[in-house]
Image 1 (cartoon, rainbow, N blue to C red):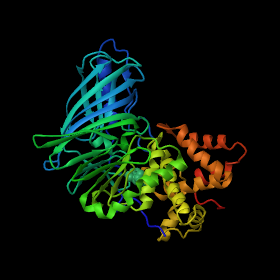
Image 2: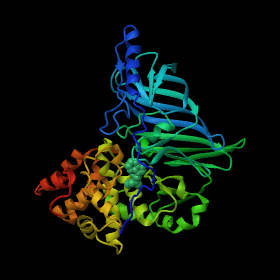
Image 3: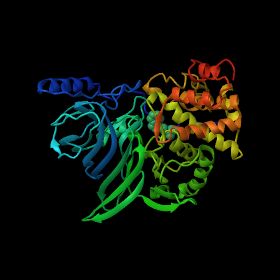
Image 4: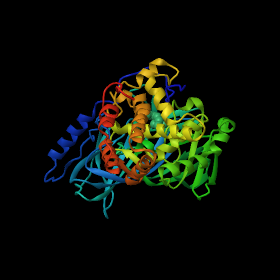
Length: 486
Ligand code: TRP
Ligand code: ZN
């Protein structure tokens, strides 16, 4: 029996928290363009038309690096920051948008390659920050935008009622960004399709620590404040960026292969999490055997207190857990490092590629560690006696994994369990050896990139040219309702 939800948030469902003001930003950008003489560029789009969050992200450029520097004081709840965003123009640009929700912007500059930073005009509408550089940018130009901003970052309530964005915790704060929360603490191109490297430098009152993904390159205390600098070299989607501020015990070790393991634990969780965290290298090694080489340059975990967040999140290199995780959760969030963090969905519709794989990783772990086999779990789900609540058993069939029935349902069980069932159907079709080649080869083929469901089905078909996946795609992946046969 398994209990649900995975996301512990038990807040009532509410409509989308995103303001629908983006069209105004585009309109203003168009007016600005029309007013200036001799302009060749046009404004970048204010969204990338994600099927579930159309105004997330922006068109016309591709971010390569974020340099984020900010100070946060849990006492005043105030953040003061500077974001340096390096990007390449993918069209001639007279204006472009960043996503930023709340906070006050005080200055924006743009520097084109080799040029000086020049003040830019900017305006805001909802979560769209429209920037109009002094000079147009040419397609192919690399440019650096610097945004100075400050204020009290907000907590967002998702369409499904859970909380993300900037969460205040018992002793500090925790930034969680799936699917839209990263816009509450830094301006950026906040859609999973635009991945970049990061340097995150955070100053907090002495006695607290600031923990993030990647590797700690410097930590200095001066005049009662501690500044920690974290470097993420491999491409990261902004929803996987995190900062955790509070009292943490930070331990650093290495796996047998020399991979740095950085674990930050709230002292109240130390006893409960010691054993499971000690197993992290072993879990990672087991996952490498199944999924191929670990895709990042360090690993670890952040363990906060139970009430600090309503769910765990696969933040890159260093997943966040609200309270000590059990082994299943650790297996799940670490599996996301391959499926989600390295191979990232092109849009939020492809979320099952994250959750189906991470759930299947749990099944495989159980199968190989004296638990139920994946086949037993699959059969129990099909029969409807898997969960401890019959309604949950029914909910598995609410919609097809590849077509969630709305933004409020992205983390419902069709994305998780039925997504994992799709993978099991593939395994049944091709046999264990080819199945392993497929899941490993998929992670290799799209390492550090983005992929969607059509990429996946094409990859599977190419890997097993003699097999027929017609019914698997039609009934299990795209079909409404419960498939007639298991
Ligand atoms: N991805 C998380 C996990 O499975 C759960 C989660 C957190 C989530 N926030 C979300 C899922 C927002 C969908 C949308 O470990
Ligand atoms: Zn997950």
